[in-house]
Amino acid sequence: MIEQDQIEAQERSDPLARKRHEFDLPANTVYLDGNSLGCLPIAARERAREVVETQWGRDLIKSWNKHNWIDLPVQIGEKIARLIGAAPGQTICCDSTSVNLFKLLSVALKMQSERCIILSVQDNFPSDLYMLEGLRHQLGSDAVQIKLCAEEEIESAMHEKVAVLMLTQVNFRTGRLLDMQRLTERAHALGILVIWDLAHSAGVLPIELDGCHVDFAVGCGYKYLNGGPGAPAFAYVAKRHHQHLHQPLSGWMGHAAPFEFDAQYAPAKNITQLLVGTPPVISMSVLDAALEVYRDVDIKQLRDKAYGLSELFRTLVEQSPYLRDLQLLSPPQPQQRGAQLAYRHPEAYAICQALIDHGVVADFRAPDLLRLGFSPLPLRYIDISTSVTVLTEIMRNERWREPQYATRSKVT
Ligand SMILES: *Cc1c(COP(=O)(O)O)cnc(C)c1O
Picture 1 (cartoon, rainbow, N blue to C red):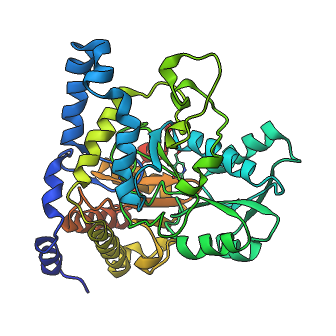
Picture 2 (picture 1 turned 90 degrees about the horizontal axis):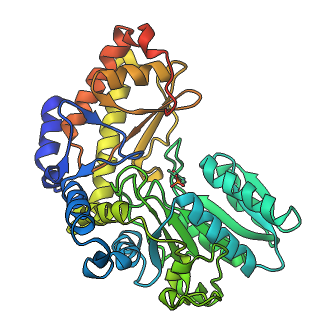
Picture 3 (picture 1 turned 45 degrees about the horizontal axis):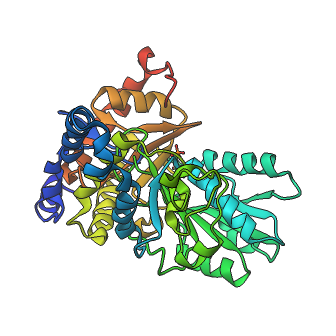
């Protein structure tokens, strides 16, 4: 049985507790959705004001040089590189995760001229799979064949005709963590190139892209990286592949010399070739400032706290007689998951709405999942006990049955 004083002791010995003050958090809210849209860092709020009022408002076009707008994609890429175990020169910030996947899938397929199968898992994030379908539609089913398997079958589904293995490190529904090192090694032994999607792992788990010899990776700027709604994403290409880099969206920002305005495209021979059009300066500046929160953070401490928070939640739920109907879908061992938990319940939607209404923000994933994210920087251990108390109260009194919790909004 976990007691309140144990939780308070955990709170006092938390080495990351000081970081909470770097966020602008709403009052009376426990936010368990940092895995979907990260909280607002104060530095990001200040930068938004400065970039709009001063840089855009006063310095106008001079800002491209004066405030280094043009370098933002590379500068942010390098800040993210530190979080994902990438040496300099291999990571860039641009576009959305989906668009970056399209570029990298195209590059990888082209490098595998004799192979056309792309292997992924059935319950990957749908947009990742939709991008595969789009590529197949574009290139034809002779050039692209899609094979989807269950997460447990990835190793046995690999063979020597597979061109590319596209995986998400942490499953967006269940939170299950895949073994990057082992799967990448297995794929390489069969001549398969690997693309990892780090949407639910970057900024919360230690990642060793270089150490695992990963070929390509993409990830998201608005989840654990706290870059704000629709923040630009990132892409990684291992240096050894830069000589083969020839991505299809050949816009001017990926040109070797964009300001020569040459009529012919000459691709940059480095990671900047992944750029397409003009960078979204306002969103990039905000993400750039948000990443400063990580400047003095040890990523292993982030993971340990994420596990501490989610284990506390899981144990408190297990202890409560009113929460027996919530069925844990995530792996029970913290080492086997990212920073989230998912519970199955036929009334998950209404329960989630009632939770939000009572100050605990979680999310719902169709058809029957209540999903909770444990972002280690803004959250305290005592927030976890508060959230389980609220959840218990909603279940015990069946508050979720109130009719206002049944109507669905467009975004869930
Ligand atoms: C959130 C998420 C995305 C988001 O893609 P966008 O194109 O940036 O909207 C992609 N893949 C996974 C696995 C995600 O969790």
